Amino acid sequence: MMANFHYRLLVVDDEPPIREVLQSLLSTEGYEVGVAEDGLAALAQMRGALPDLILTDLTMPNMSGSEFLSIVRRRFPRIPTIVISSEFQPALGVPADAFLAKPFRFEELLGKVAELLQEAPHTLPLRGTNPQPGSSATANTTPPYPRTGEQGGEKNAKT
Image 1 (tube, one colour):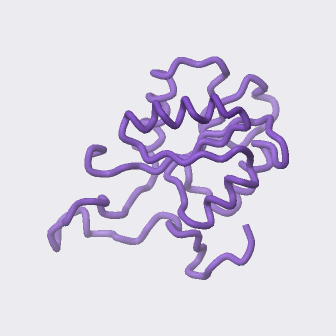
Image 2: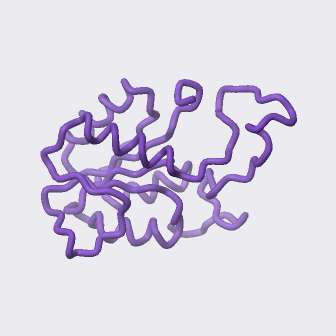
């Protein structure tokens, strides 16, 4: 199924080499990957199109990963999130679905991404396909969360 649907991922990290490597490796796996240098830049990107999954560091300038995730959880609770950080401590109570400590194995990251995307409540028909009327792909076309920066059918003025 993933061959027909390019999941949209957002990588948020203040270290350019980390962003570039993750973007390159995840793109070769068939994912559509956006990158942002901090939480503020990530929220700005999310105004245009929401990702299917977010990978974020915790320690970043302007807006930390913890602050970013708390906003994402309030506004878009169904978007799965993965924290990738050397700073993570479970007692911090960071609102994420998964945690990977830097350094991590790319295979471990891929497995966690695939697992969370499979569990996510995606109900849109596959992009790039033409489902037949009455098929299971068209049975429920209501998105689980807004896909174009809208919430509750209204445009967001602020992020």
